[in-house]
Length: 93
Length: 249
Image (tube, rainbow over all chains, first blue to last red; front, top):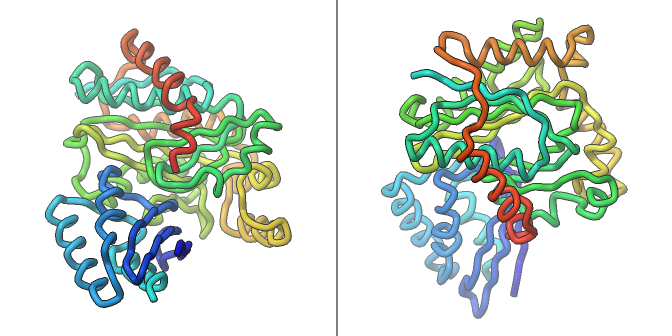
């Protein structure tokens, strides 16, 4: 099932997520909006980073992704990985 | 280091974005100096952020009918309506080593020049993170930055005159029934030089911005190099003018 979740992050930017979920597992994430990400190429890492997450594993997946992005020097402006975690949580059963 | 100021130029949306990328590439290759350019969009255009969904943000059919260009930037941020006569746009391109490492700090520095330029024409502005300059409590300038190949590109607009009706003809703000509410809301949140300093001409604002951006820099006026021009023309044709690039999200 595809869900579109849209959120204006308080003090940040607008983020839209199109999340595909099959049998309780995230299969695809497409992120659009007016946020900033440096470098921009890291968007795919973020989208792919949530694939495979379930309700049970979402928090752990988000923390791992956060650490991985931090170690690569990726900077998010206008949203955080915790915001995305919360939005993806809405798409999961 | 000696800065280059490009002559003011009006160009299509595809060409404006292509010029920025051509300069970025040339600086990355060590062939061009740090560069500042002020320019206009002719015809009027909508630019969208690199992560935005074109069909969701822009009324593409209305743009086509009105002859308004639509282009995807390589920077993040939101959709902007660039009226051919209603704003001043700038780009600054330089090795990122010339700027603070922090993104917010470098926004603060460059937006500080916009604040200085506005002060020169009698408008009190201030940097408003993440990427705006406000006057009073209303936005007067929006800015977007990227860093690639160790080069910083920041471009942005200073609103001279606000054509809210056209803006919301071409931008998709949701159902028609909420359009009036959105327009009222924008009028409460956005301002322009003409609102705040009605006697100031656009040329005076441009002069003030040039003065502020170039203060305490060694600089000279020079055009694009032949190589930059060739790369820009290719990028305008193959990338920024293409449907693939515009509709990639």
